[in-house]
Length: 218
Image: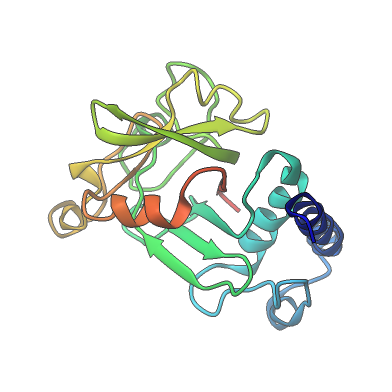
């Protein structure tokens, strides 16, 4: 089968298989043990480790919605902003096996002005210093003030200003695990997905370019 045909077949598989999951999620017909048994082209729509079924469903529905704009669909990143910054909430997920690697990640200071450690709100507004929700395309790498960083392209109305706002993935000292020992939470970014300095290489290796990052508070 030609590469073009394989790509089309994968897109068709994602669209057809996840349409059922998407409808179920919207209708609210699957929960608890039933969600864990829900069949899809990739197996059960639940993680054996850390991802809540409703969040995984939302991410896979987003992947299906943006499949024509996301060239690589084998892995996705999910930022679970329902959890505090003290928890592992940045998940790199193999779509076929649901094997998950999890990291710490900071949220924006505009999303948590009182420094509670919990994301309170999202914003797409320039100058808000807040995190944005929705689906992003992981784009190119560049050298910036935080070292090697990765640009993100917002795919939804809720994050359409990501490029103009310079919302990227980068490492930062305030996202290192030792912040939890001292402060009980990570520091805050200016809206970027800041990960620990020792984790950045693994995040880049797992996510790479042309894959989807999904940010949500579900």
